[in-house]
Structures are given as structure tokens and as C-alpha cells.
Length: 327
Ligand code: 5AD
Image (cartoon, rainbow, N blue to C red; front, top):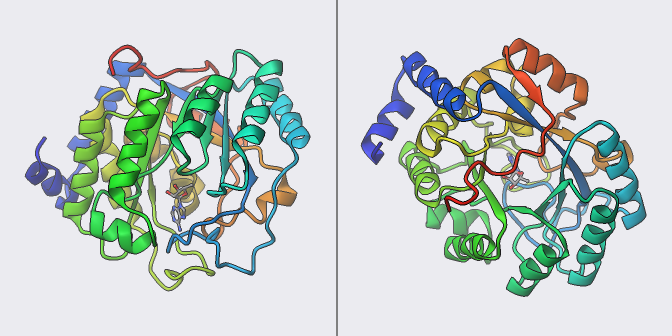
């Protein structure tokens, strides 16, 4: 698909054929399975001032926290008990959280669960950090481009450049990570052409995982008065991403689940998603992980329910990239 074709689909009213094709491709690649991941949002400290994100450094109304390593490890034991074999460690971008400390945390977790995959989502770090985390046992890294439009990227991320982000993704891949990226749908100033370019970027980079989610305003950000992204548009972006990337893992992102009524969640899976991420951040901290307003907490039971509604089957396998060896 080229840019014109993708933009055509994004504009189109009649799109059943698009979802059918996305579904067919998903079934061809990983059958009717939905994979389970668990996330721990272990720190909300952040040095950045991203225009859309409630964790932005200048937001003084947030109580900042960093969980103790021992506490994080305790939560991973709960995750293991539930049978989930991927742990996503996410935080704001905080270079005060030292290389040594993150390596120590990874090692502690791997010591108890050596077969569990660890995904890091810590923002941009030094190349030597990426290497050290990988050596310590991290398997995957998630770093979203958010938008492939360099001007919009710069506007939303003061002091940062898209080029630098893409370079980081290349470095992560070279360092041996399974690499995840993704975008936000419905950012102010973002055009359908921009979304088509995001999808073409996914086609070119062929990430192992792609997180597509709608924009949701957060009250302590510059974009507090902007309307949320359209769910139907985000769903089309998801289906097109499935079609162009074939076997990448595509989570039904929490942002998607937050703006969609629960009885309609199954649509996200019939449009090509095949992963759901459960939130294991302890309640006490979770309240302050306000990346956007009313963020949904996804539980194991939620996953059971939606997988049933979508007529799919839950897989608790570790589910490494289907692209390993192809990259
Ligand atoms: N709306 C939607 N997604 C957001 N994120 C951060 N803030 C928002 C928002 N207001 C997403 C970004 C980031 C991920 C952790 O959360 O894509 O990469």
C-alpha cells in the first residue's frame, strides 16, 4: 500500500473490507490468539515536557514516586503467579534513575523468573545504558515515535528531534532488543497524511511491536482543552498497521480501552490487535501515573471477558517476536 491508498482508507466511510483483511492477516500469522503482558509503572518522575503527557516535568500537581526495587520484585511475583510471562517496566524519562540501579532491578527480577521476558519503556537513554540493560537481561524495549511528522514531533516534544528518536530505535535493534514503537492518533495539527506516514514508517522499520492509541487530554498539560482522538480513526490506523506489518504484535492499548465502552472492546481485536496489557502497578502509585485523564486499569478478568467477546483464545506464552531471525 502506498500513501494515497492508505490515506484513502483513512478517509473512507465504508471500511468493513479493511477490518476483514486485517483479521485475515492476523489469523494467518498468530491464529486466534491474544497474548497477555503485565505492566508495572514503577516511577512517574520525568525530565521531559511532552505537551500531551501528564507526567511532564513542569506538572507540579502530581505526587512523584519511584517504587523501591524490592516492591517491584514483589509485584513481579504476583505477575508470575498469574502465569503472565512478559513484564513491562515503564517510567517517565528520568536519567537520575541510574544505569546501575536499572541493571540491578533487571537482574533481581531475572533471578526469580529467568524465563520471563522483560520489556523496558524508559524513554531515551544513553547507548551504553541500552547495552548494559540488554546484558543485564532485558529482552525488549518500547519507544514510541508518537508521530512521524518531524515538525509536529518537535512541537510536542520540546528539545527533542524525531531523527534522534529514530536513531535510538535503530540502536536498540542493533543492541539485540525486540523493538516496539507506535503513535498517538488525534494529536492537534496531525493530518490524515501524517497518519499514513506513521503507517509507512511501521512498514519500513518493521517493529516487533506497535502501540497505536488515541490521544486523550490530560488536565495538567498544554493540550488539556483539545478533544480526544476519534476511536474509529484509531481503529483504522490499527487495521492498516496490521495489514502492512503482518505479524507484529499489536496491543489493544490502554488509551484505546479507556475511550471505548467495555462492551465494544472486542472491536479492537477484530481490527487486528492481538495483545492486552494488564496493569499491576499498585493502586497507591497508579493514582499518580496520570499520563492522561481517567486511565483505565486493565485487570486479568477484563482480559478474560474481552477475549471471550472477541471469540479469541488467551495465550499465556511468553510470545517473543514472530520476526526474530527476519530483522
Ligand atoms: N494520550 C494518549 N496517549 C498518551 N501517552 C502519553 N500521554 C498520552 C495522552 N495524553 C502515551 C504515549 C507514551 C505512552 C506511555 O503513553 O504514547 O509513549
